[in-house]
Length: 81
Image (cartoon, rainbow, N blue to C red):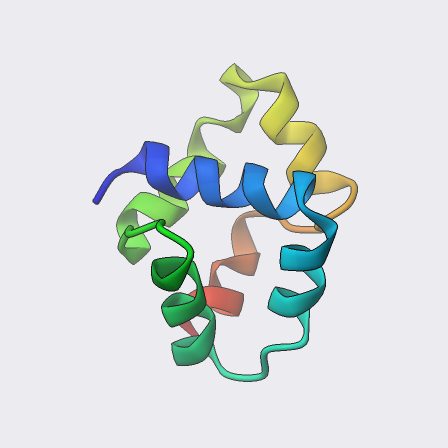
């Protein structure tokens, strides 16, 4: 598990429209976390939240989080309730 896995998961959703569509249609947080694991990304809540803490260092990640995905730090509840 790692922050890189969480960041790579977000990049995957950004770059793969099919996976993004699958993900956004999942209703429960447990199923969203399992979806991430099923496609090869294993991370915990702390690691997922860390992505938001370091986005200023990664302009690409800032764009991903704020534009297409519409996520910001409070969106960790989308994955972890």
